[in-house]
Amino acid sequence: MGIILGLLAIIIVLGIAYLMSNDKKNINYKGIGIMLLAQLIITWFMFTTQIGQTIINGIAEGFNKLIEFGTEGIMFVVGGFELQEGGVFFFDVLLLIIFFATILSVLTYLKILPPIIKYLGGIISKITGLPKVESFNAVNSIFFGQSEALIAIRSQFHHLNNNRLYIVSASAMSSVSASIVGAYLQMLPPEYVLVALPLNMFSAIMVASIIAPVNVSKEEDHVDVENVSEDRSVFEAMGNGALEGGKIALIVAAMLIAFIASLELVNWLIQLVFAGITLQEILGYIIAPIGMLMGIAPSEVVEAGSVMGTKIVTNEFVAMLSFEPMLDTMSEKTVGIVTVFLTSFANFSSIGIIAGTVKGIDSTKAGAVSAFGMKLLIGATLASTLSATVVGLFL
Image (cartoon, rainbow, N blue to C red; front, top):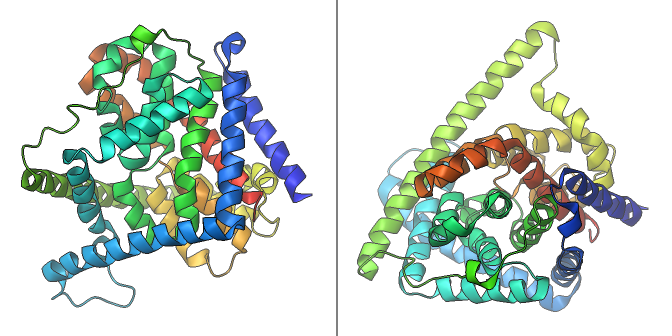
């Protein structure tokens, strides 16, 4: 029964995307079918085979070792503070972003990451028939943040019509950057966070390719990774990476303060009219129907839905912080589904981040992003739902 409901949820997600499509005649059904099959194979392999378990555990151990290294640096700077039980979120989680951003910057300068991303994107492009730029951007979005992923294809922006712009923006919104993954792993089960990365990549381009189909010529489809780093030495790359990571950590901290405080304000206003009701509970009931189709148990669906809704209206960190205390009380299936859903940038604030980045690259295209901003958020949320549903089929 759970599999039937999960398949129904997948059909509903793709059906909503189809209804939103602006060019139904040119949808690449073959490519979408291949990507859905790839998602099922990846999830099956990671969760049900010994080799898959070994791989995902090995990756998790690698991240944990990097977290240990990062913690050494953090403790050198803040180790003299008297921390209460449970620690301080900024010190224990957010400052790790600095170390991970430094590693990514160095790997980019050494030209290790760019060719890998380019050729993985090329493979996806060949298999699915998607343009190279969109495929490259989808893979790039796994490693880098929304702004960085879009900046990496800035030389091709003059070729991007509104449909292509929608797809690359959707990929950026539906993914998460590797520099932040270390912070997520401090809060949620590693195996679900890590499997969400490739699943969200495919989900994003599947949903976006239905909503905004593209068909481009070879002349308009070229990826250049020669000048992705402007650093002149490995030390400059380390310095710039650390500064970028520090900026991200402070931005996340500022957003958490603003969103959590705003959420408390909204709940206070709601309770002036409806005593004992919160925005999270309202969102939980709204999301509950699709949550049950995704595979969440009826007894847990309102609570889980409230976390998922919180992520959409605030951001993933706020939702993860509210979900973390529930991990021991919810079933493994619900934990897996909700964790995968939370592992993306699909929220209202991302619309402004992406529109601002596009404006910095090509001011004439910023208006288009702002115009389809809500459509972008709906598509990215559908992508998160699709990834979480696929995971639910194997739990």
